[in-house]
Each structure stands twice: as C-alpha cells, then as structure tokens.
Amino acid sequence: MKKDILLVDGYNIIGAWQELRSLKKERLADARDRLIERMAEYKAHTGWRVIVLFDAHLVPGIEKKNLKHHVEVIFTRENETADERIEKLVAELSGRRVQIHVATSDRTEQWVIFAQGALRKSARELEIEMDDIDHRIAKQVKDIQEQRPFSKIQLSDEVAEVFEKWRRGLK
Image 1: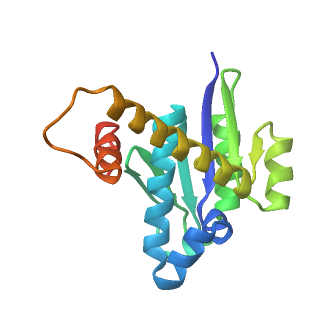
Image 2: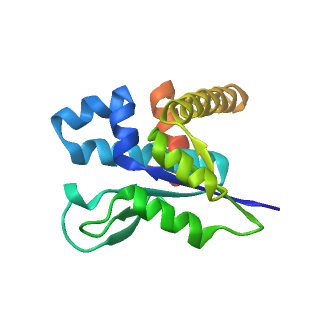
C-alpha cells in the first residue's frame, strides 16, 4: 500500500487563496496559522502526511521545524527557498511505497517536481478539495446530530462542528 505525502508551498498557497490573502493583509502570522489549520483538517480527513514549507526570507534565521495540529511545518534556512527545500524533500522521501504530491501554483516548480516523480496539485485544486472536505465534515456532523438521541441541551451547528473538530484532534 502506498503512503501519500503532501508537501505544501505555504506562501504560494497563501497568495492564491482569497481567504488567506485577506488574512495576510492584516497579519501574515494569522494567514500561516489558518493554512496550517486547514492542512490539519486535510490530514485528518485523508490520513496523508502533510508538510507545510515557508520561505526563510519572511522569517529569517536558521531552519525551524515544528509540529502544529499534527502537521509538520518547516521554515527554510536563510538563503534557501521553499521551492529548493521541496525539491530536496521530494528526492529524500521518494520511494516505491511513497507517492508525493506537491501543492503549488508555481509552474516551474511543478515541472521540476513532476520530473522527479512527484504529482502536482495546484493551489486551486487543493482549495476545491478542501471545500469538498468541509462539505463532507458538515454532512457528517449533521448526520451524527440526526442519529443521536434527543438531548436536553441543544447544540447549534457551529458548536457541534467545533466539538467534531476537537474529537479529531483539531482546534
């Protein structure tokens, strides 16, 4: 059975998704956090390993790696672009039982990683996939609400969705 890994060019996706572009105008850190939350939902729904990469030039210093909401987050080294780091990761992680997907709308990067055997996923394709996941989660929450016994405490759809995210380990 193949193991799927999604590498996400963080700032490329932030620049492509309307919701994240709006957040970036106010505060870049909020846009990064929201992208990571969305990728945590993606991971929870697909079971894929998800790694989000950000260029160091916007957060200077040494390479930083951390885990947030079960998503691996990498800030590249100074003078290293996310594209360069993605190419290295594709080479390092590739194997017979691994399928790597790279989410970016950078055409040059798409060709480079495609030549290395990774599959590309444009920012728009990832956004459409996330919208579909959101609809599925909402449907699951609604189905659970309809199936559960009557409760004296009525929960709004929003609260029930928050509880469902908590149940899956998301905030």
